[in-house]
Figure 1: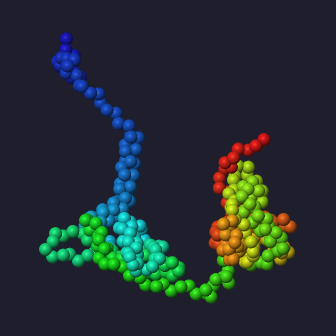
Figure 2: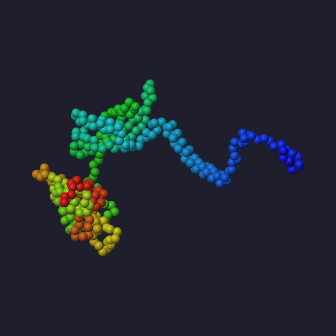
Figure 3: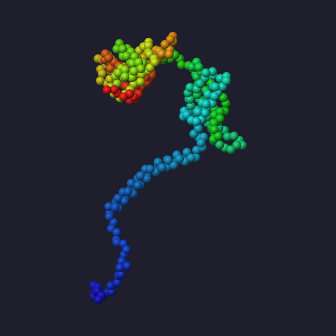
Length: 330
């Protein structure tokens, strides 16, 4: 029996089979997901707007590097990097110095000072290839210690480096011994003080330990409290004619300079004569100069805690060479 409508008429129900049912259910959209999606899109747009100028800049830089010819970066400025071509240039100069007879008797290369390059002129009738003319500069010294500037010019291509001509040399003006020298203050910003009598005693104790050949005695003289550090003394030499030159005051932050006459630490420039066992009969001995760091400089028992050549950066116990290679005895 067919059901009736609201006005009393009857209507037929359509037979609905199971295969006519919809394949999907209606989707319920969560409004929160829409907000999250809009926020992500907003963040993406802001990041894209910020990064876009950087992307354009990177593309321009890359395009310039690709389009620019190889010789565009070859200027006339110095290039101090050591390359294979620089090594070839040094070998060529040394070979030139070693000729018989030598252009500079006793001459040797003592320093590489840099190079300058420029693009070579293209040769007519030959295939085009990148070629540069590079001049490598060196300092020479002869057997008497006189120094000279020299340069050698190489043409560099894919086939290698070839010298265009033999080098020459120009003398370097020697330093004026009266310009500075021993009168120049060696430690800028450090105040000068007079050496106390105790300083000479500390330096004498250090020189005996440093040249005594006994690592344990040197460490004891330094006063290093670390049990696992080791010091290497000199052997076969002794120091004589000890002389203390400039003395610099290293005042501590908590010291009152108006009431205290000595700093906690001090820098000493010391000159000694080195007497090697094989040269004890020599009439004149070579001179050595050390910078020493003196600790407990405001006491009656100061001690040398670091040393080095003139101008060395000294910190307490920085002369330790590592762990003690000998096991501790019980």
